[in-house]
Amino acid sequence: MPHAIINDLASRYTAKRYDPTRKISAADLAVIYQALQLSPSSINSQPWKFIVVSSDEAKARLHDTFASQFQFNQPHAKAASQTILFAYNPYYTRTHYGAVVDQQISDGRASPAERDQQFGAFGFVDLNTDENGYNGNWTKAQTYLALGNLMHVLARLGIDSTPMEGVDKTRIGELFAPELNGYVCEVALAIGYHHPDEDYNASLPKSRLPIEQVVSVI
Amino acid sequence: MPHAIINDLASRYTAKRYDPTRKISAADLAVIYQALQLSPSSINSQPWKFIVVSSDEAKARLHDTFASQFQFNQPHAKAASQTILFAYNPYYTRTHYGAVVDQQISDGRASPAERDQQFGAFGFVDLNTDENGYNGNWTKAQTYLALGNLMHVLARLGIDSTPMEGVDKTRIGELFAPELNGYVCEVALAIGYHHPDEDYNASLPKSRLPIEQVVSVI
Image (tube, rainbow over all chains, first blue to last red; front, side):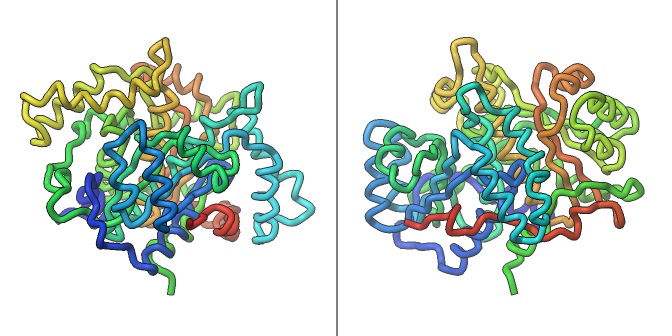
């Protein structure tokens, strides 16, 4: 019998149609939100916002962002239980990291006297920042850590999901400007329960490259 | 009592010293390798190689890559049970995706007659490729999905880990050139069991920004 972890990973897949009548329970949503908060990130930077599109009003806005691109993902906006926008800070600064450091002091990881020393880790940000202060490639990569973590969480919870790079980042930037506050969303995750009849992907076999092509033990 | 998922995520942390006498079991390694293979990626592209540094010879090579940078991570090279190099393909092409498509056909996700149609998804690669054919920002982000997934797997297995952006990608590129074969490693994950006395991070509290600052439900 395969390991429980492999069972979870082998059974998850990308849902292609959602059952609009099924919603994720409040208890599971609480786990999902806390798992997002607990996601690891480089130097604990947490350079992200997770915007959970849940109300009819927000779903209608998300639906409208698919007006001109990636229309195959548009149905998920209204039919999925929620869609989570994974947004990154394209200009992560010492001020942003200062909030992390102060939280670490408040949580007892360092004393107030060690505050300056805690900024040593910020060197990793400098290494990934260009002359205009842009470090969006680095902060975006961190959101993929959170996404990989959350997709595993959802598999454990038996909740279906659809990772979508097929989102119109410009339209999302416009229609969700108040919530994004300068952050950028280029990937989103629809979550919910797949449609019992209309999800062609539910019954297709999983496919991966042979393990010896991707994993080398040396 | 917290949910098992939250327990796992709250108990994982970045190990800062490994117990060199403790090795990961073959059974757990098999789960780890299969979990890497099963990691999700955009359009199932799998634009990665996971190189598991396991032998004394390979560990000595990895140790040497820390000669001039990030020496605080150097001890892990020899003391951790293994270190996994997460490497991405900086020039992912239709040929690479063709191998994925052929695997999908072989696994029964599509018929041979549908081969051309399967390349429709390749548009996502084009969107992320510059005029020189470089798409390393996109393929690198996919490796962070795999990393986020694997860090969750390790938490479930009770195995400690250390994600390291603090690796010398140039030296790794040189010393692991035969294994990388043109792929690029900018992040690695040491795995094993923390040192019982010398891991200062084992007893420090976890710290995260307040949930209302990172998760907005709208």
